Length: 221
Image (cartoon, rainbow, N blue to C red; front, side, top):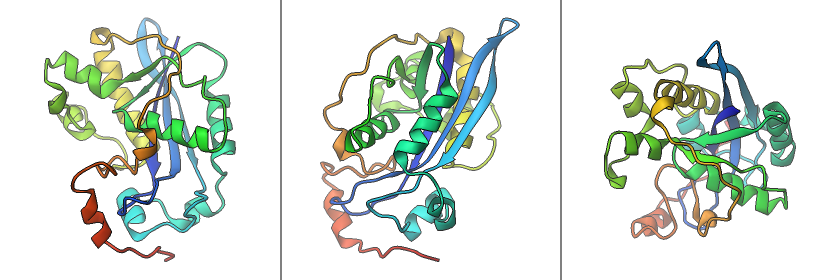
């Protein structure tokens, strides 16, 4: 059984009528070797946004991803096909840090009319960590804080998909024997169309109206 630990980077939206698009997919493939879990391989692909092809200044500053990175990248269907080819045909658990990345995958697959049955055996590692620490749901730790708690040095750059996936995989390897991963089939979530990025900006958030005050022009520099 493989463990696919993945992370997505998306366009940052400041207005509630905007919808984020995936601009990078990163993943780490964890397997068992000589009785121990190890990161055996990694995956990274930039994704060309379609609805808002010019990245905003906020997106560039938050992710470090540039217009040049996405200008020649594959659109989402082709990038996803490469990701699934990299996963291969072995059975796998699909794991992310928090719920947002799964919801974004669902939303974009639906938008492009792509098969979603591959989104199976999905587990939220942030929730797993919360359970291990016996915390309430509202006390969930961020990735950086979790690494610090486990005294694992952060590798790479924050808010880059492959780096965040690799660091999440390091947490998983450390705590795998305490985690209870679920086998499950794909099931549609109710509110995936509200995702605007993992920074906490949701259309139904009472503070979302403040976004209307933030007018932002695309950044082409």
